[in-house]
Length: 481
Ligand SMILES: Cc1cc2nc3c(=O)[nH]c(=O)nc-3n(C[C@H](O)[C@H](O)[C@H](O)COP(=O)(O)OP(=O)(O)OC[C@H]3O[C@@H](n4cnc5c(N)ncnc54)[C@H](O)[C@@H]3O)c2cc1C
Image (cartoon, rainbow, N blue to C red; front, side, top):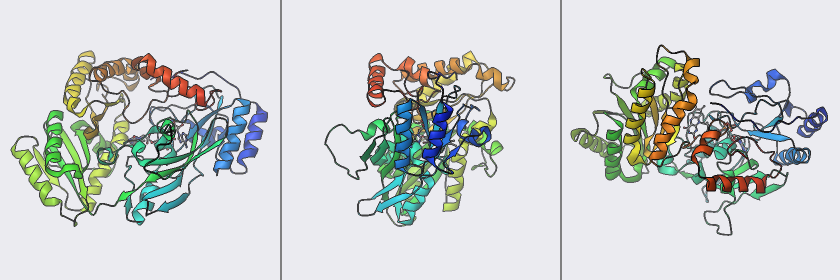
């Protein structure tokens, strides 16, 4: 969990005064108490240092702030909802970076139903975009546990995934255009709402997943989809990850791309979530080793997917791909199951002392990965408790071993690097990724440098140097310079 730090810098009192003027009254926080929420991370209790949090209201204000920082070589940490899980959105411990939050840039700019697009400020909370689209009978499919507080600029900068990637793709697939304040303070108006545009490099892709290292995203054009009219949710007990992958294949054969979510869940995380987050209960009477939470949806009459899904699941049980299954009979029941899934990160946190991995491997390698990782971690740490859940339809698992019961949390966390190495070596052997959806930030910086080829790291550095020669945008994150 050791994080590297950027080159220390100091921010002069005259710079602080000038930046406060640019942000205007109500546009900044500077006391330790007021800035704490922006300096601390959701996970692992990290707290960075910063003398100033700026809260601009418009793209012009962002441009003025960034332009000033470029001249004075002041480092900026862009921030959305601060729900990121890799220390990408917090400052280092040097007190040499200001935080720029988009929390006051929260307008829906326009919605174009003919084009199925919505244009929003970067600080709009994800759930507000979902609700605005739903009010127009459209779906904005990005969906994740932090959706009530993460902001779309943060989602774009982390290329967030979530539970509907299987059907709709990750954030990268949902963005058509961007407006960005570049590290020299210029505004790039790339707010195009086009599905086809072959006029050169697709520059927006650099900022998607760029973790704020190349500029501040101030607005985005997003794709909308028809709101499904029929949907079913199923909670399915399976014997193993291998069975879940076989089940996925069976449901795909029977129902095609109607599957919109397919989540694999180990029993231990169900226990943690029931114990650690109020309002959750066991969906089945019997206890099983693994579960799948699945959604199918489409445009037919309400209830029209119930029968095909029942038949597909019955055949899967008959053939030994599943042990038992419950199809929810109501939206309320379905919401309850999805709430439990969304609460799993919180349940894991409440359990304490887990070491998180956000890995992906080809779906066909999931079972082998889990088997090998379980065996290797157990051999090195007898008594370790296995815990994992995730988006198996995308080959993405949150593989999070939990400390043996007789270990303290502190002692277990000392093994952070060693356990990462065991798990990530197996991931790489299966030609997977050490960060499927949460990004690199500072948490996985060293690990990424270790596994990426020199050619890839060189290309990333070249892009960073070209766009941010002064190195002021979110230094020490994503790629070591
Ligand atoms: C309970 C819980 C569940 C989660 N589930 C998922 C999940 O299923 N899938 C998933 O992918 N993630 C998940 N996450 C992680 C997190 O919610 C996502 O990474 C989210 O996209 C971060 O958005 P944010 O607004 O909070 O960004 P922040 O945490 O504020 O910032 C994240 C990164 O984006 C940069 N950034 C933010 N705004 C801008 C901007 N306007 N311009 C440039 N850079 C910017 C920051 O500098 C930082 O590098 C979860 C987190 C929690 C706490």
